Length: 322
Ligand code: DGY
Image 1 (tube, rainbow, N blue to C red):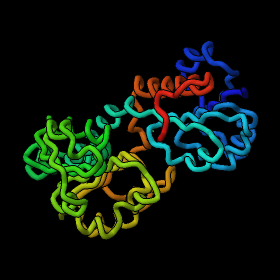
Image 2 (image 1 turned 90 degrees about the vertical axis):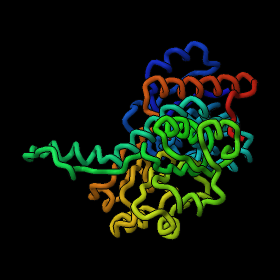
Image 3 (image 1 turned 120 degrees about the horizontal axis):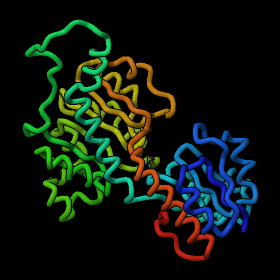
């Protein structure tokens, strides 16, 4: 059957599952850095399952290095743009992801970034830490009142977008959305109005938040043209995938003052971050921590183990990528 290769130690969850695994588990030695390419190609040799993370590029070369006995790649993430699905399908390898268990965590972080940018939270924090003398001022750090009828544009309303809509409704925001669930009853119950087009959403939203997967079609979904269509003074939030945004075009839009701010949990050339954006006070940047809640990360790992066990036992996985 081959061993199960886990590309990073995942804490206590590993011990919870170790006894139930139908094959020997081999774990990469450190959680700090992923295996480099040479280590990965070597470690997967003879594996029946690979439990991968977003930092692992699982392509034809890796699948071939593993060999014909490889049955499953279980990604510990809802996104799976790090995996070559065609190459996996050609080799009859099942790919699974972890949908559903991280919606709330990512939605929470989206709201955190939304408020941090519009209400200048990070900027204020940085200022305080300088030790500069200050006193309350009527104009000090004034930002956008999201609860005073601001419009949130959700691009790609799926599970996570819906969780964002639920929270935005509680803040009293108007919500407009594109995406597969924009016309659902659930969406309506959270006050979502389906946008007639992406262009309309960009034109009316005070804050645009991205929640779609990264595919060849969505790369640079937000480029110079889309940024120019955005409302003057608006904000962009990205907790989905970095390459959805052309970061140089974003830096231009912020530099010119057309956009007021941006909140980015993910980055176009991750883990590199854009040097222009890094210098801008109106940009909040985080190190891809959307799903980084303790319970959420455990749920993600547990689901990946369950998927692995199912496939290796000849059963249907719980959450296959289809
Ligand atoms: C996901 O699940 O796709 C996240 O980006 C990883 O935390």
